[in-house]
Length: 213
Image 1 (cartoon, rainbow, N blue to C red):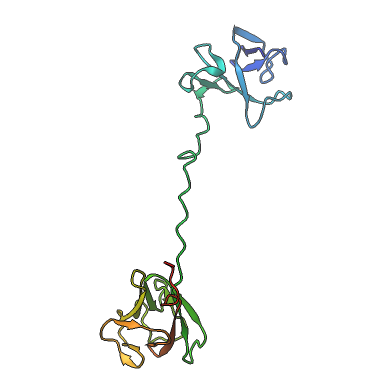
Image 2 (cartoon, rainbow, N blue to C red):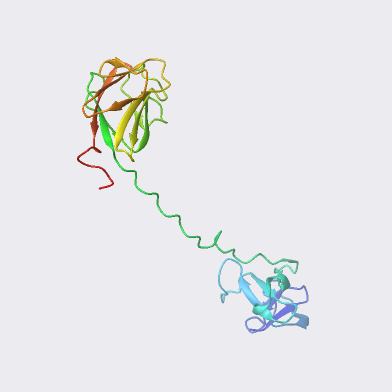
């Protein structure tokens, strides 16, 4: 490929065009071999507008990015666009997936509003309330359940024991009909009352099973 400039400074392939395809003028005084890159595609045979890239050091395509200059068909030069950047933080390893959250038990509504709805319990703290931040989010229309942390159920994995305590609710919490004034241990089939909603506690982790086995 032999690239030359016309008298107006346009670059074109002399092997394909006898005169400049942009303005029709002949070659100018300077002739150089250059690597061409088509604007919007590969180098075609339709004489479509092209942008030439060359290296002042004469190294051609092997020249460093710092040496390259871009010439557009109008003859005006501009800084060469940076090479397509490698994907940001190239090929960073994806983080390992979080370990699964293990089930420790269930709650099920046994009172009229929402009867039969069930909720899973996990390790650690399980807040009960109406708001999105609670693990046990009760949406049965009972406005006497506090939005955040009406009560909290705790599963102690190390000792395989469940506890319950009153949270931040304005209304009291009850365990088997008794008001929760302090943290108490939970046992299978205990009845918890938050607001006017009653729930039965069903443990998965127990003397018969735990995730350490």
